[in-house]
Image (cartoon, rainbow, N blue to C red; front, side, top):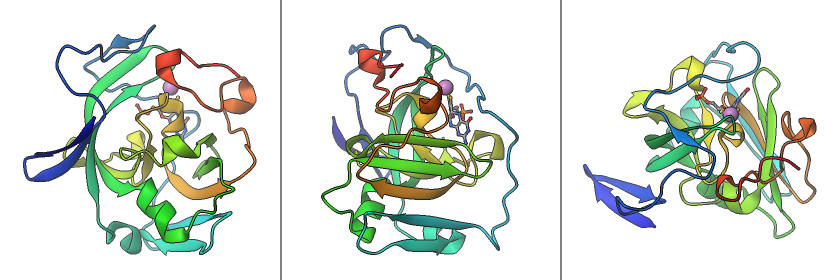
Length: 203
Ligand SMILES: Nc1nc2c(c(=O)[nH]1)N[C@H]1C(S)=C(S)[C@@H](COP(=O)(O)O)O[C@H]1N2
Ligand SMILES: [Mo]
């Protein structure tokens, strides 16, 4: 694990070395990038779009599209493991690190979970440690291109440490909270944690 400079960009690698087993148990590798979501792809209007950050924080924040994308962006290389069994390796994500946002708003020591709310009503929750990992981003670009609307554009969360249902698309609201609050899949029996390496699928 560690940062490396690649094509002039500072990149966080969660895995290193070609011989390590990169695919968690029960997963198989795909070269494609499947599409998976409930409901319709929501429209994006940059004039009215806002991202709200609240909860147990010292300085709640509401920022527009220009304010978000004007912040220093980072690139991370990460694997993407859907709980239905496919894994897409070596995705190059660009965006604003969740840990930088957490620093900006002043997350209090009581906080244990991040709650994510999306356009269209999808929600998810995850341990704060995973959200604050160096490769967890609010991503606007993937493999050198702007995120397509189908894959979560304009803004999606990317949490490579956890199953991909935590990588919420069309993110509009983040809440840093002390008490866990199950999201869409978590309310249907899935885990609040979702670590693919321990096959932590169900609550
Ligand atoms: N808003 C929203 N985000 C979502 C989902 C969803 O239904 N709605 N599905 C999740 C699941 S289960 C997966 S596997 C990934 C799929 O992302 P992709 O369609 O870009 O491959 O998005 C996650 N984020
Ligand atoms: Mo998934």
